[in-house]
Amino acid sequence: MRPEPWRVKRVHKDTRDTFSLELEPENGDPFSFLPGQFNMLYLFGTGEVPISISGDPGQTDAILHTVRRVGVVTDAMGQLRKGHSLGLRGPYGEPWPLDQAENKDIVIVAGGIGLAPLRPALLSIVANRDKYQNIVLLYGARTPDDILYRKDLEKLSAQLDIQVFVTVDRGTANWRGSIGVVPNMIRRAPFDAQNAVAMICGPEIMIHYATKELHRRGLPDEKIFVSMERNMKCGIGLCGHCQFGPYFVCRDGPVFPYSRVEKLLQVREA
Amino acid sequence: MRQLRDLLLTHPIFHDFPEKYIEAINECAWEQEFLADQYLFWTGQEAKFLYIIRDGTVSLQAYTPEKGPVAIEKLGNGDIIGWSWLFPPYKWHLDAKAESPCHALVLDGRCILGKCADDHELGYELMKRFNCIMLDRLAATRMRLIDVYAKGHLTGSNYDFI
Ligand SMILES: Cc1cc2nc3c(=O)[nH]c(=O)nc-3n(C[C@H](O)[C@H](O)[C@H](O)COP(=O)(O)OP(=O)(O)OC[C@H]3O[C@@H](n4cnc5c(N)ncnc54)[C@H](O)[C@@H]3O)c2cc1C
Ligand code: FES
Image 1 (tube, each protein chain N blue to C red):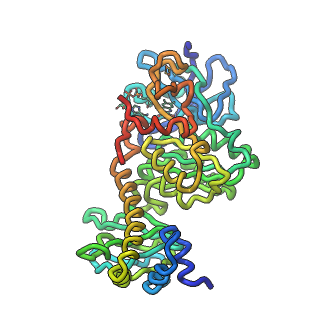
Image 2 (image 1 turned 180 degrees about the horizontal axis):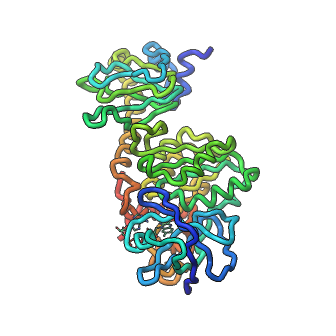
Image 3 (image 1 turned 90 degrees about the vertical axis):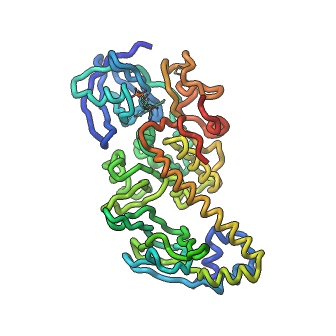
């Protein structure tokens, strides 16, 4: 349970309120993780928060976390610079079901910062492209300035065997792309619902409408996977802080088959 | 070349639509091409038609004194544009501009309303289907109003929207 000291190797400003930290272990030990897993990041004297790993699962000497500044700890994290230290424990949680997606179409649906936990899955898919059929990424952001990983998206779009669709809620004068919500893109997305797996991460309301559209296309609940967020403390299934119905999000999730959480998603947190 | 009625039948709105009604709709429909940057309609003009986009992108724009025309939504293949011919004052509330060359099926609103007045069964079938689409659009608009990606929306904290 004790955090290990890690050092900031590089800080990258992604958008107005989002940045990525590339971290390396002070002890030099290699680190491996599965796409969809998260770490508990501890800022000495400030607090500890769960943050998904957003880097390449093939890289073992450094890891990436993409963080959105929303409060005390994430704001303080935004002050970190190259050479600063922080504590890290992990990786924790259930990963995206990439093995179940083999020989199938994959539909990745992401909203806002929700692209971060899906990025390792995308990188892994790209690295093992021939294991999968059609790959479709549907990504929604608030405005064009809020689009994460622009370079990655451009690179992926240029690749003929992956289809990338980006939409924004509010366009700007020079935005030539799509304007509208992500779930609406599902209707026209090129995938075969009879042989597909969907992975969704984003605000819960987006998950709700995205699953509705996936159902309309004929994708069954058990082929839809969602990543859930709940406030956490221990991160390892001990404290009950992240309880979500009968599940602990830190241990049983954060990635769940939709069939397991559908009923719970309809219940508001107390 | 495919007949117009076949094109109508390929659209989900006419899925399982009774054959005799497809014929009725067919009598009110035609195909139309729009060039990139051409306007389908302007705010304030009389609203006469419904457009089913088959190819290309159309942006719906609102005019703001500060910024000029602002695109509020972009619609593409399969989307339906234009409901204002259904309700008084039968005027467009937005501009619709083809962003790229566009191919649409156009339905004449007055002709459709006439057929519905003659046959209420057809009217009921059609309005049921139109309402589903309008409901979807309303949901999408609400989703954008909620500003789902805004700060303070932890995934579990904003789930009271239907
Ligand atoms: C499994 C898991 C993975 C996560 N992965 C990431 C990630 O990759 N990147 C990332 O930036 N965040 C991620 N989060 C969310 C992150 O843990 C929280 O944003 C963080 O704990 C907030 O702590 P804070 O002290 O900065 O904010 P607090 O001071 O605790 O909260 C301040 C305000 O922000 C709101 N808030 C809290 N969390 C969020 C949130 N997630 N989104 C929007 N508003 C929020 C609160 O409701 C409150 O109003 C993840 C959470 C979980 C459970
Ligand atoms: S955070 Fe303690 S049980 Fe999940």
